[in-house]
Image: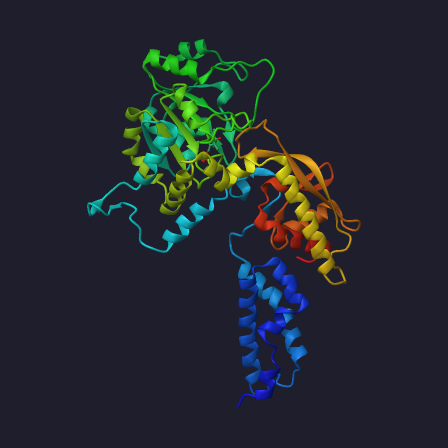
Length: 479
Ligand SMILES: *Cc1c(COP(=O)(O)O)cnc(C)c1O
């Protein structure tokens, strides 16, 4: 027989929610997560209490402390996903190591609504037969870029590989020596060219390439003139480049297609918004290359994808190329891309809803207001954290700084921002940085000139509570 008295002494969820330990957990985790963990732990304790020779004689306080001792670890284990959300306080908007573009709510909803269900991916519901999986994004890409045709594959590296293999296998592709770039993660133009079976013909020098260089190298074996966006570096000094328009004119004269790998090509006009460096896909196509390729998860702000857009007679055959099947896009990314593109139908809506656009264009004073909010929230959280340890010693100040687009988007662009500098009299900067990185939630900060900085441009409003709790936790030496 269970000991009824013992069961009655087990604390209630409401009682536990009023304890300081649980309140501090509530500052870090969603309420539902905490309540769920309490319920599971209580169920285990009831079994313990009911067991013969169990701990039936415990007082309510003893039960509470037994439960609270394990609760934090329970929640950490439940939250310990293989791929964990982190707070990006680096100010690098497109951070490849941190997963590049966070998706818009609309894209997330599109993914979660379809991920666990069968979907009309390649099925025409009206006709009752097979259809193309890309139909739902193609029309939007044409409308947004002015292209005649579009194709989408797994990422931009795949897009470049497919274009080279499809347009130039066994034939020459002419590229400037100044554009034989390496993009992080082993994407190198000469290597991808070799894998595609196209033959690289380098022209010009590292710093200067002229239109005559392309002209001299062109011949009957030439299949393509390729221009590659210098995504992650810039050259200055004694340099010369062939504008895309001139290359397009040469291609037209020679009857050879021209391709531009834009890398981080945008659908939003950043230049008009005062951020130079990247043309829109529409602007790029208007200068004349027959075909451009862009990433889906860089400045576009969508899921991983490689978009090929341009003239119909160049793009359409690529869709039937055997590599298209090997490089094809998955349905979850497709759902997210379609939802992201839909937001672009109204530019103001895109800026408000696509996180990359919002972060890139947010005025400095708004970022500063968020920085001040973090300082206030952290001070409150520190005051509410009981000694020993507590949040004591944490010194926070708001200062100016510069964010960067990242992701090989605009190498020279610096966006004025507001940072929260973090210091502690008893903890070295490197130690504090490590504590934040290993904390809950993990926070990736920036260390510059011996200072620990949290750039608030890449921190969302919804992350402030977690970030404040993480700061107080790190100051107290807790995860
Ligand atoms: C980023 C980039 C790529 C690779 O794109 P992924 O989508 O990462 O595969 C290729 N070319 C340029 C110029 C880039 O900037």
